[in-house]
Length: 165
Image (cartoon, rainbow, N blue to C red; front, top):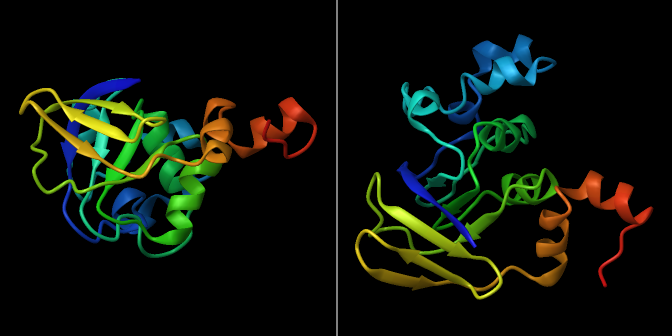
């Protein structure tokens, strides 16, 4: 069970908004790059976010280039999951591969600062602030296993192969 505050963004949040291109020189310095996560969408994001919080988006979250740094810097800021109405396919896969849960759910009623509780196995998102529960298709076991292992690379290191038991 994951629990934290909602940081709400709109539709079409691109990887350029998540990782501004002007910081491309920092790709080999991820801790420094993480300080600039989502700053073009919300300049105060990295100051406001706390460990366990959620990034909540609208439609087509993560569109644009396949910058794998985008979900990495979100995760490095302590975000426990990204929840959106829909995701760009490559961003979604990159999230799972780096160990950041990505959940497709109707986010239209979630407000900035709402306290959320996410159950990946059951497919339930509770908005404790508004006393509502939203259902979503639970993540497949293979994805939950990869996430539990810390991402695809860590999963392969742990099992010496791609295994789902």
